[in-house]
Length: 98
Image 1 (cartoon, rainbow, N blue to C red):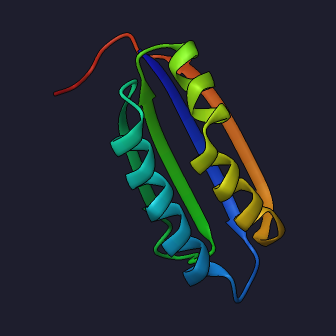
Image 2: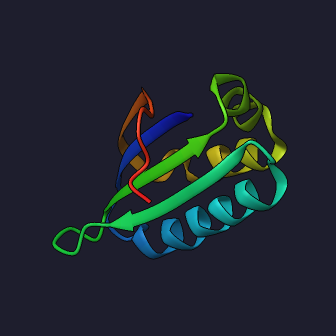
């Protein structure tokens, strides 16, 4: 499995708008992409502008399909100006704890 983590820092005043938009992105990814199995959205309780995403895909190709999707392009365009920092990391999952 291919795991992607993303940490977003969102501009002050845009946090709630981003929250709604990223939750829609998570739902779209899970509903429309057979290769997407997990799309968790987390928020820092001490910093409402910091979000953490944990995404699990079949493989790198499934993640590439995600990046090419219309719903990702729409999300990326919508939030681009609200993001002050974005850190993306990829991992190979070697064990699932469930």
